[in-house]
Length: 151
Image (cartoon, rainbow, N blue to C red; front, top):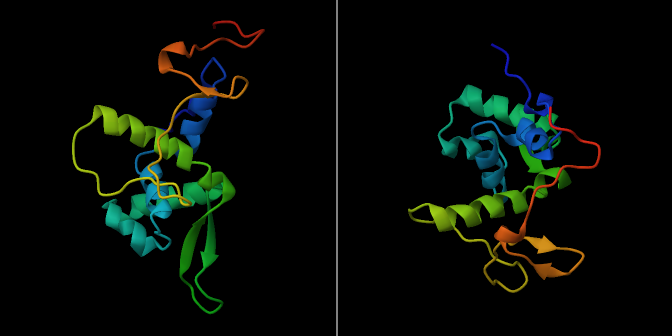
């Protein structure tokens, strides 16, 4: 059975469109591992995904412009996967999921996010660009765009 794209939902939504790109099982973990330094298929195998699943997810992430697939050398038939600008922009998504997970799940953590310049720990907060201030989650509301009706 063919999966229906979430972007086909009745109400236009960037969350649904984003999940069509990276919402499949393993996809964000592949991106996470790329931020940790994984570049070759063999590096991503450490996730534990079956090879066919891993290959399919990497192919989708390349097709979506999250990764660029590059030959390891001019003479090699092997490739590495390098995050594109679009892929690197997923760091904030991963950081937000991580922040939620640190608060609401239990277990050990093998890594931490740090500010490259200072080494300080990084956290993700909602920010109002107009007011230039952090805002609490309880002060965020979802509003329909003008002209959008409930379907």
